Image (cartoon, rainbow, N blue to C red; front, side, top):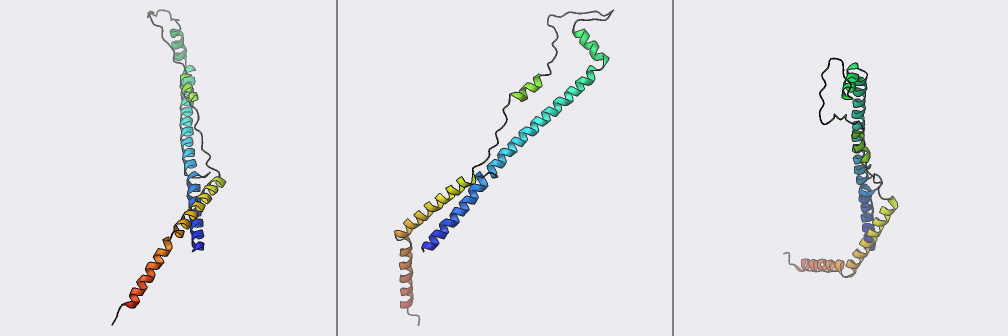
Amino acid sequence: MTTRKVLLSAFMSIMLFIILLSVFGQSGILVNRSLSARLDELSRQEEERRLEIEALEERRRQVSSEAYFDDVALSLGYEREGDVVYYFEEPDVLEDADTMSDSAEDEEPLEVWKGVETWILASVSAGCGLLLFIVISIIGAHGGGRRGDADNRDARRRHDEFDWS
């Protein structure tokens, strides 16, 4: 009976270790979720950078055209001969290209969780196995198994005493 208790405790310890390793280990479920979240964040940042590059390339194409220079000159107050100039109370404001990049730089990158060391998980599962062995031993010592044996013997006696003829 003691061998059975030891084997049951060892089996339960191994199963607990496997479960803990698959959830909390260095390549477990929680680590994979953390890596997935970090990958999503990096993909989003890459898409933002790509869009920013496209916007800058479009702006560069606009700057090289003569119409852009005319627009800038007019916004700075220059005028062509024969044009009628109207002055308004509020001056026009050019958009600042740095406003897009400020929002991306303010965010802190997500921390990637590395998982729990394997020896810690093995220690926890071994401790739980030892605790299970102690609990099984205490339950067995208080007559948990003896009561069943006595019931089986009584049932055999009643079976033997029964008149089958």
